[in-house]
Structure formats: C-alpha cells, structure tokens
Image (cartoon, rainbow over all chains, first blue to last red; front, side, top):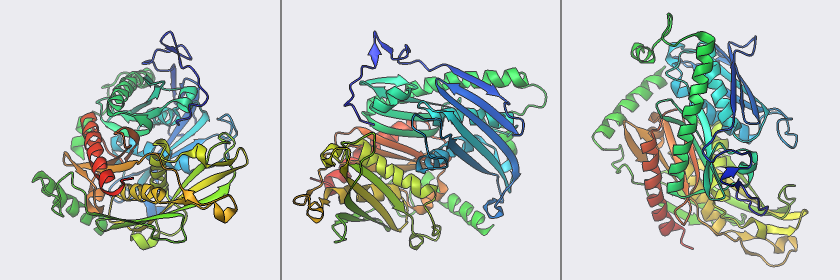
Amino acid sequence: MIGMEEKLSFFKDGLRLDGRRPDELRPIKIEVGVLARADGSCYIEMGDNKVIAAVYGPREVHPRHLQEVTRAIVRYRYNMASFSVEERKRPGPDRRSYEVSKVSREALEPVILTSYFPRSVVDIFVEVLQADAGTRTAGINAASVALADAGIPMKSLISSCAAGKVDGEIVLDPMKAEDNFGEADVPIAMTPGGDVTLLQMDGRMTGDEFRRALELAKEGCQQIYEVQRRVLVDRYGTIGGPGSCDAAEAEEEI
Amino acid sequence: MSDVVMAEIRKDYLYHLVLKGERADGRRFDEYREIVLETGTIRKADGSAHVRLGKTRVLVGVKIQPGEPFADTPNKGVIITNAELVPLASPNFEPGPPNEVGIELARVVDRGVRESGAIDLPSLCITPAEKVWIVFIDVHVLDDCGNLMDASSLGAIAALMTAKVPAAQYGLGEDYPLPVRDVPVATTAVEFGDAIIFDPDTDEESVADTKLTVITTADGSVCGMQKSGPGFLSQDKIYRIVDIACERAKEIREKFLEV
C-alpha cells in the first residue's frame, strides 16, 4: 500500500506508535491443545491478532481422486471470521484467502514427512478471529505447533513473521497502522536452521532494504521459534525423551 | 502410477544435466527463451499484448470502463486483474472457476502493476466518490510451456502501456493514452540440484520444489515477490535470485518496454 496522503508520524523518540523499538516483535502468546475434537490444535496471539489452528489427520482423503500413492497430501484452509476486521468481511473464501492458503500450505509442507502416510491427508484449518496485520504469519506459527501437537512427523517446526518499511525505516512485525500506510511488507517463514519456506513482498524497497528486512524477519522468526519450542516442551516434556524421533533418523528411513 | 514413474525419470534426467551445467534446451542457467511481444492485437480491447516466451503464449487484454470507486479510495481509479487458465492451454487445466494457481497468477501480476505505482490511479478519478475509471487486466493463457508469471506480467504492462482510456465512448471527452508511470518486470527462477535456473519451462517447473518471482521497477527497486511451491530456499539463493532478476528485468525493459 503506497497511500501516504494521510500523513502520520510513525516514530516518536525512535519508538513506534505502540512503544516498540523498530526491531521488536509484538507480544506473543501461544497455547497448545486448545480444541477437544481436533488431533492437534493451537491458539496464538501476536499483538492484536487472535488466530486458532486445528490439524486433523493423517486421515482418509475425500474426495478420493485427490489421494497420492507415494505420500500424504496436505491441505490448508485459511479463513477469516466476518467480525475479525474493521468492516464486516463477507463470510467464505475470497481470492486473497485462496492465495494465503496456498502459500501457507507450501510454507509447512516441506517439513512434513508426507511419505510416511501415502494415500492420506493432513488437513490444517486456520481461523482468524481477530486481525491486525500479520494474520498469515500468525496462522503458520499456530499451524506448525498444531501439527506437532497432532503428532505429525516433521523435520522441524516452522516460524513466521513479517518485516516492513515504514517512513523509510525497516521495522519488524508491522501492526495494522504501519501495514496500511507503510511502504512495504515482507512476510516470511523459515525453519530454525534458516531455510526460507514462505517469502512474499509487496510495496517498494531497494535491494539493500530487502536484505535488511529479510535479516530482521529472520531474527523475529528465531524468537518466535523459542516460544513455540518452549510451549511444546512445557506440554510434552523434554525433546529427546523416550519415544521421540530424531529428524535426521527420520530422513534416513525414507 | 505411471505419472509418478515418469516424473521420477524426468527429474533424474534434468538433475543430471544440471550437474553438468546444462539444460535440456541448451540454455545457460540465467538465459531467457526468445521473447516475441506484439501489442494492439485485439482491436476490441482498449489495450492488448500477445507474449511469446519460447513456446509459452499469453494474451493479455485491458478493458477500461467507468464504475464506482471503492469506499476507502473515493478519488482513485480501480485495478482488477484476472487470469484464466483455459483448458485449451494445457492438459493440466480444467474448465471451471479459477483454481488457486490461477488466482495466485492473477494476484502476482496485479501486485506488480499495483505496487510499482505503474498506473496513476488518482488521475483516473472522474467524479470523486461516484465515478472512476476501472482498469480490467485479463490474462488469457493460450499455451502453457512454463513461466506464466513472467509472460503474463510482461503482457500486462505492455498492454497497459499501449492502452487508451475510451472517454469518447462514454461521453467523457476525447480518448487519451492511459497514464503509465513505471514499468514493473517480473523475473522467475527455480532451484534444483543446487542450481538456480531462470525462465523455467514446464519440465523444469515440475521437477523443482520451489520457484521465486521477483518484480522490479524501472529504478531497480523491488516491488513484489512471491515464493511459490513447497520447498526451501536459503537466504544466499534468495539474494542471488534478486540480484540476477534486477539485471534480467533491465534487459527486458530496454528491449521491449522502452517508453
């Protein structure tokens, strides 16, 4: 969005409208296993975003013609509640949510060991209950934890956040006001090892600014990863305990 | 099952070529297929462009009509981008409403035009809050031989640059050229076997896990990006793609889109 006609000042004494430093995330809260019926679930708050994710599966594929003989398919449905935004959103999928669903699925699929479950499906449902810029990244963070909660074998977790450009400055995790009137937005997702699985960008940036944005978003992802990991460890005990499965071993077995 | 086997054989073949530094059609890794651009091919459209990128063929038509502005931008024209993956263009396309691939294509083409500020939207206001010009960009894929993103984006900006606002038809004065202020160019690369390959054909797209489209503006800024397909990309590879994308886009701009 390059709408600068409503001139606002985004910084005061080097701090942002909500008092954050340019390289600071909004507060994050993650709860795991919040739904009774789902195989795995997670609720996340990133600033004013409230998003809930559920995972069902691996389970039988319906319709059956979608099934793959060598692996499980992954489906991801990103959906916004009609009351989640300023003006009521018409319920149901629109073109934006189709695209968000596609790139979010592709952000998670590479870490899911789909070849363990041929002819089946892993369904991921993400509901945005309240939106304040960054809902796709919140959804991916929640879905990643929900997948782990469902016991789906994965190479690693995925963590996601955005960086943006506001008043010429690169900031981490833009909130709604910054996103609306900012000059660019770069949502990314990555593994703890730094491999990027989601990368989008809109707005306008020089090559150098993009590098700084990606670097900043990477730091954000690392902080989010620590929260995701801690929540799962709190719930399920230490990693490497009995019954756990090492990702490298899992790789070799395929 | 045979599809799966064929895919594996094809993957193996292309993978081995890449290890030798080769591609199936003999191109360098950063080399584009021949581009043939023809504008004004559809007389009934207000702007149009027929793009051939190798054997890939895309027709983009622009229609400009008066209509209502969005409530939150009462003084601005409107851009609406659509992409049709009609079944004539590939055995993999089916009739019916656009699927997520078509929607993604349309949204990435739209992102380039919108975020670059290529169209001067305030100048398309006729009566504030009542009537503005609506620019419809319709991407019609005719033959999908790979890299629809770049072909469609090129078609869109070429069609816009040759488009006329049909004011006379609506009793709003004389026709005039659509004001275009920037020239976004999309450049797409895929990664496989540790190599980065630009302008992938359908086989290369099918064996690569992921591709990255980078849209750049005339001043060398980046105005849009889209990673598409499940797969990993390292930070280094992303930077390399962005750097090469800027160069390739410049060449394409100089060759085909000189104002």
